[in-house]
Image (cartoon, rainbow, N blue to C red; front, side, top):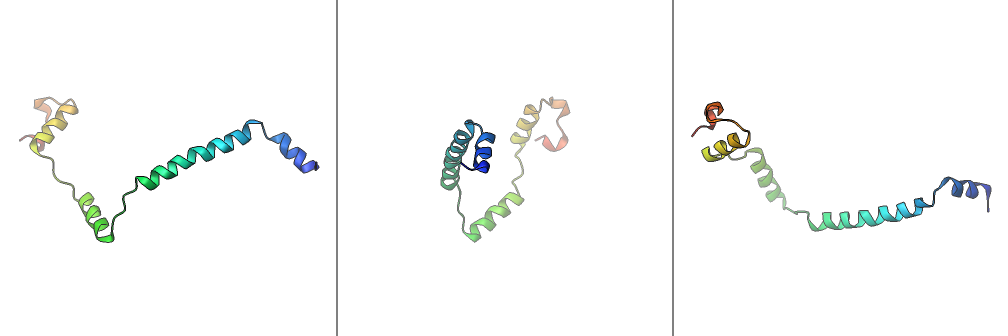
Length: 84
């Protein structure tokens, strides 16, 4: 055994090969999941999606009241724009 190989083996713990294998196994399901759960859109669909995200719908009065309720605001502390 060469001196370099001997030094290399001494510097690695017995857990290193195990960690390398576990890392490979952990990355495989992530890659599979990403491939299976990716939405593929045609260029015109991508543009429509982007435009929809840039101009979200305005909340309804009921949604505004619900938001105020979830923030813990009382009826008197609800901002005027949130009142129906």
